[in-house]
Length: 269
Image (tube, rainbow, N blue to C red; front, side, top):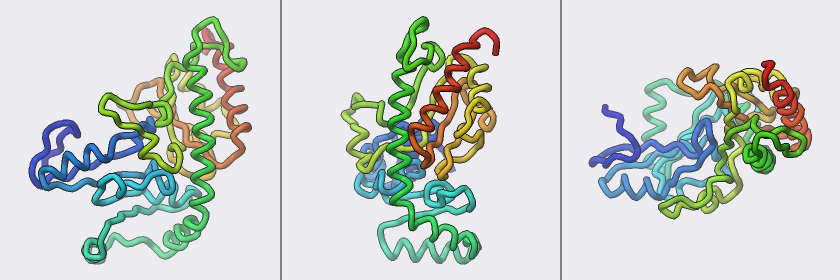
């Protein structure tokens, strides 16, 4: 098996594995573009839509052949189960997957199945709230990132945050891809920020009170991760935020107090 880049020419029979929105930044990729590209050579498109669960994104609308979710994340929603989900278009494809799963032995346990069914009953309530809150926070943080050194925004000194990534901030790209037409049910609830210094990124998770320093995403509790702690190739200034179901003003106040502390101790961290 050979792994090639998404943007090279595909060959007959290729499987295009597309993650969108992207981990850890939460940026969207154009599903229809890659579906058309791989279908031209008779290949298939699998979309990892973990960051864009229903009702935010429906990849079949844009040409996906198979959809993958980490059921551990938004489908589970309570940080208490491990599961994976594959969704296909036809009963024939489903039967083949079911047969393969049976003989490979990769079946969920009874407790995990019960927990997942419990969680799916509130998916339509949890995800839109998380999406709405994350969008508010991403736009607020982006305003801070655009604030120069020597100025303040909402009581926070400029120069603490360098960049914010979120699909709501992308705009239309050079090929005409508009993420809002793909993320039809709202924006992703997990996204990333880039702090100005590695010391800020190391300190921020431990200055927050509502955001729990932990590696995961999609749960009802908000999480903050210094990405370098789990991915040694990551930018040392990168922080990933997974927004939960808490009140958005509480989450904003928590980020505000932490960023104010970073901004007031720039030379002392």
